[in-house]
Length: 277
Image: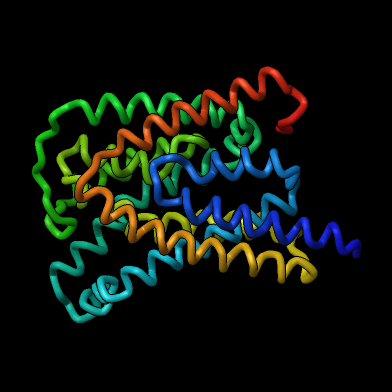
């Protein structure tokens, strides 16, 4: 194997691992950023798609690690604790809408919408929506995640369905949706983190199963590097975001989406050969 190609691939793995880890839990769309970054790095095709799917596991595990004490609710549910049971049921309820729609439309979404132009449009539209929501004075009914009722969880679950459109942002859809439905900023953010665990595990494992033919033992090192970088960068972001939202709203992320999406559209307009669908 050409050593230059090897070094380039590992550098791409580090860059994409950082992109995944940094953007996964921010309301700016990790999928959108990976699609754009992959095109700019010329790291595209079935093998690259499988790599991008795999490194999501690193980001998921960062949430599991951060909330490892809180996730003892599973043990509490097994022991019959009613609050723990309610929490797990809420996650299951919120998980179902996107799971069903994802299974029904997965292939069509991948085929028609996974390209930089549609992602950029979604980034801009999502940014505008965040700005509109942040300028409203929203009533808060639910202060803590443990105070959520099943209708609250179901509403957030339907909001998560919007993230099936690449560039929308799963965390953005669930956090902003949760705030619109009466959750506090912190409750909406934490529930978004918890909901990411079953949602991303299911989506990632399903994608990996469908892409199993593209997996190769020669890519183990490449995948491992991307996974580790994704884990540690996501862990930093999760902790930083919880501190950030205690004093700030999401307007900065909205402006970032609009500016970044606009720049990508301009770039695609002036250099149409750069991006490959």
